[in-house]
Amino acid sequence: MRIGILSDTHGGYEDVLKALEVIGKVDHIIHLGDVLYHGPRNDLPPTYNPKALAELFKNMENISFIRGNCDADVDEMVTKKNIKDKNRLYNFDGFKIFALHGYEETLEERVAMAKKLGADMVAFGHSHVKMLKTIDGIIVLNPGSTTIPKDGSKSAAIIEDGKAQLLEF
Image 1 (cartoon, helix red, strand yellow):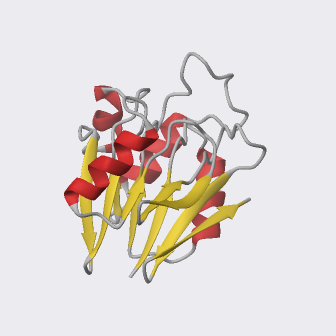
Image 2 (image 1 turned 90 degrees about the vertical axis):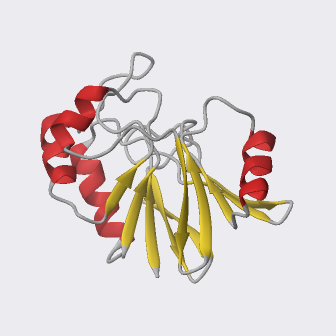
C-alpha cells in the first residue's frame, strides 16, 4: 500500500497540485492539517486560492484530514470532508500511523502516545520543517509544508512498505 502525506497546505492550490504530481499514484492521502487558511503568522502565499483547493479536496475520495490550528468549521463546509479529528490512528495493512497536527504536545509526548497506541509511526505537521527519523523504535515523520516551508523547500512524503520518504519540489 502506498500512502501520501501532506501538511500545511494553507490554501496553496498550485502547490498542492505539484505535491500530488510528486507523490504520484497513492491508495490514500493523509492531510495533517492547516488546509485552507494561510494563518495570521504567515504572509499570503503566492499560490493562495483556497476556493479552488477546497473544490479539489471535495472531489478527492482517497483523502482524510487531521484538524490543524488554522482549520475551522468553514473548511469542512466547503470541502465536504471531516476535519474535526485532532488525531487519529490509521491502520494500513497492519502498518499503524498515529497522525496529528502537532502543536499541543512535545515531540517526546507524540512518540510516547504513538508507542502507547501500538503505532509504527507518528506523523505530524505544524512546524513547516521536514523531519524523518526513528525514536524509540517509532518512525517520526513531519512532511514539512507544501506551501509555506520554513526550511527552504516545499515538500510532502510517501509511505510504502513501511518505509517513509520525504519528497521535495
